[in-house]
Length: 192
Image (cartoon, rainbow, N blue to C red; front, side, top):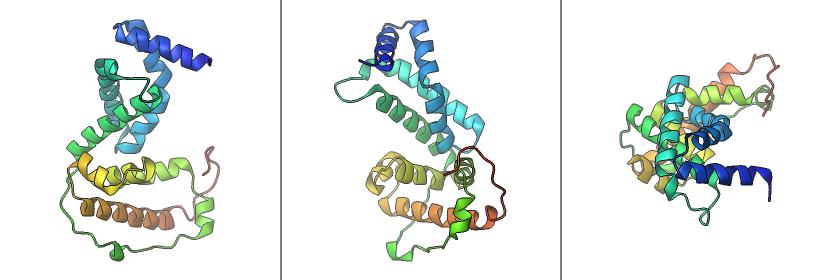
């Protein structure tokens, strides 16, 4: 058995027993990974930290519900964090019903030379510039792999509204990439 799994199992047992040291250990173990998820879903660093705190509170309050037979703890905590971000984003977002036609999707071409200059941090910053509702749908669809029906259920919107927001996100991101990254110098650490 690997060391990480043993440590995680011990911390989960301690958290179920309401041991503060185990809670602190679990928090430290998953802090960085969960914060990255929160940064992807919300508009500002302040909201990301709010979502992280809200998520860990839910984790500690509901840790008894985690069942290792149903899946890995990492996947469970990730789901809790994503839902916390969605809850926070739903309060920020203003969804309006939109009837989308898949044939209406506007494709904007991105020059390959532009993509060579694009970095992970750049893309994250551009996604955070999207309107809140559009950002939520983009993350749930592209990053998490949810289908429009599932997104609609989670956000309380129709499938066509979800499709419209995804199309709008892609269109806006392409335009932002084409206009803002063309002359950007290289030098970031995490190139895509």
